[in-house]
Image 1: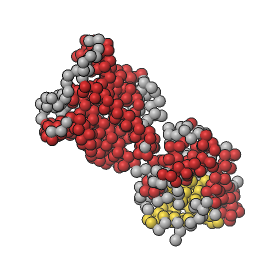
Image 2 (image 1 turned 60 degrees about the horizontal axis):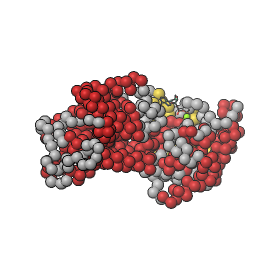
Image 3 (image 1 turned 120 degrees about the vertical axis):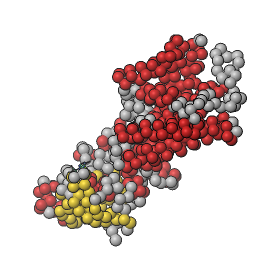
Image 4 (image 1 turned 135 degrees about the vertical axis):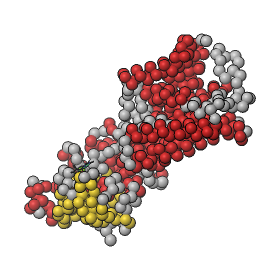
Length: 294
Length: 235
Ligand SMILES: Nc1ncnc2c1ncn2[C@@H]1O[C@H](COP(=O)(O)OP(=O)(O)O)[C@@H](O)[C@H]1O
Ligand SMILES: [Mg+2]
């Protein structure tokens, strides 16, 4: 495999990682907590997409918005059940973190009950699998579409945060909840919106990931959970742009470690990076962790 | 009926009783000052009225509505708007964005734009910095932004928590000039200050708070002549 090929692989995979990690970053920027159930929502997004395709016989593309909606709603329910009650009691962040682990286990168990543990696939022929001819590297239409959808969603999120009233309110809540309250912002509602957005992005990433590898199990979240954490540590916790950059860096590292013959160690490479980052640059590659939030 | 009525308000931080049964009222078109030493409970009073703190006991009546225990965003939505101590502008956002946030509850887009421009006209230094991060400005500029932001909410009662704190004398004068302008617009104000001299000059009526209790009240002019007040707060 040549270098161009590696770069191409890293780019489309990076798109999915960034998309997934943005949800971690969003929730972290606003609540200051890691939502460790995020990868379970990712998995649910994939299964909602799959179910819609299998049961309703719609195209895989139409399943993406449905999966985003479904995963977004799961995010809102997660907030209401796992986080909001703790917030009301001013519980320490560690309890919220633990609560999110519990929610994650529950979400995976429910998926096991419903979908079983055998790998499931999108039906043959529903995904265009032939690579495009006449290019110096291998890329399938699905990989291009994955990248395009990821980029469109990331730009949409940036626009929402930077340019809309809701986005400004999100940034105000991220900065200081009490001050936001004095400005007339209902912080609880902003949390719900944030969880919806984070869930929807995870859902989209889940379907895209499912389409890329066409093998889904209730445990597929494990494949991205710690990579996503590495991504946001690279980007600076809670830094939205940082998460986008981090997604491509982690994907690049993974792809090149496979190419270098380290396929079995690719996770080890990623976690070594996470470890080194936490040790030497906990504020992220581009620094200023606190200032750049959201 | 007064615009704001506080009845027997008690607020605690855990075991610390910060307010121990205070009552006062503000009439429409009045500037009322709450003066007191550091730690007297002035900020606690404003934060309880704003809904950031829940009182243990007592009632807060705004415009005839019992708003005790309401969420802070709903209270602001009624037009009971606070400029908190230490300004609390949103540092990583621009001057413009801060002003827009002040109007968060409003939907009259064109009027909002017009109001922002009139604030920029009044505060030239904010105008020059409209796309700059609010946190990069000086203390005085940030205070003007904080007041401008509160004005964007179209307050029916403006509560100011030590707006002159930490500012150089020249800027202190400017801040009080701004308060006088707001008063001239007919907007009622609850002004919390340690700078009692200035506060009593601008206020119609004043209350003196000591360790969570109101120990004195009266027309501002009268209090400014009060021997005890002079020795304690104006000395
Ligand atoms: N967050 C807090 N936790 C505990 N005690 C507090 C807190 N804030 C204020 N207090 C106490 O409550 C009392 C009143 O404080 P405050 O309302 O801030 O006074 P002021 O604004 O008049 O200076 C003081 O004794 C202060 O130490
Ligand atoms: Mg104070």
